[in-house]
Image (cartoon, rainbow, N blue to C red; front, side):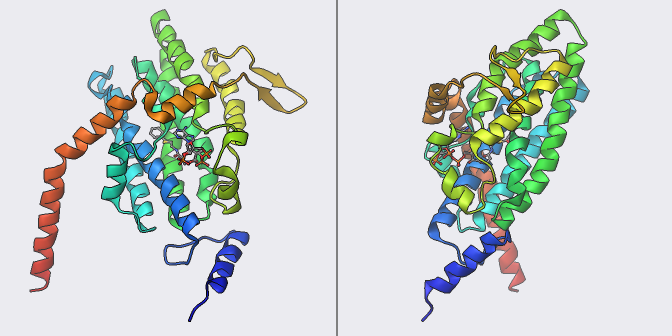
Length: 313
Ligand code: BYC
């Protein structure tokens, strides 16, 4: 009869030595559940995240911008696919994860519940939203669960490219007309605070951080990453020529960081709770796309069954 202690010990040693936990390794149920929760939410975020930018594909200002945006949105679909695959290595079922998303039983990032009102929003999402995602995800490349860490490496490379395209689009608009500069400033005003909220609640209110750090899933707290994001964004905003909508933003030489104003945590709670500006439409759109794709899944299943039968002779 096997006892759990040697397996538990092996798991703890693997974490302590910063090695990776792989799908066939024993892991505590809590670790498996946490990884499925985080990877599932992350996958949903990538898939729902296609909507705010996808909204502008038909109205891109030039063929070049349309091709760039199409490629970016397709990359996001790809990220969702790697992540759902990573969740499957933990025993999660992809169809079940999708059901949970469309039934509102699993979360996705709050940031995608805000509307995209102009083409400048595409640039600001690339700059700030992908920028925040990179800040959060680069440390996840060292996350203790192997398939997730490896998916993150590829995702981060693509996100870096997305961020550069967003910044380049904004630079172009800032060299344009007054109306274009105003569009950029308005997009920054609307997306700055929600981008800070992407890092999650403040450390004292974060329910999962302590355990996730002990398991080597998260490497930094929500507040540490938020600060890192503020510090990297301020010089970029200066270079771009936009004002970040926070009068408390100020370099603090003693701390070696920028001080910044209070985030509206009630707003984050409302958006996570389903009451953001676009929650209902995002989930409804996802459900409609899933329902519309039923025939593709049926055809693929029938084709796979036929191929398997043919292979058996
Ligand atoms: N929005 O204890 P906490 C992208 C939830 S996609 C919604 O701190 P944790 C991109 C949290 O899940 C970006 N929910 O949790 C795609 C928890 O709820 P449950 C997505 C949030 O897990 C397309 C509760 O609040 N990135 O890059 O330690 C285009 C308490 O929070 C949010 C990822 O998913 C939020 N903002 O830390 C462009 C990265 N914040 O599950 C870009 C991976 C918190 O206990 N995920 N919650 O019911 C993570 O790093 C972490 O899960 C979080 C939260 C930092 C998000």
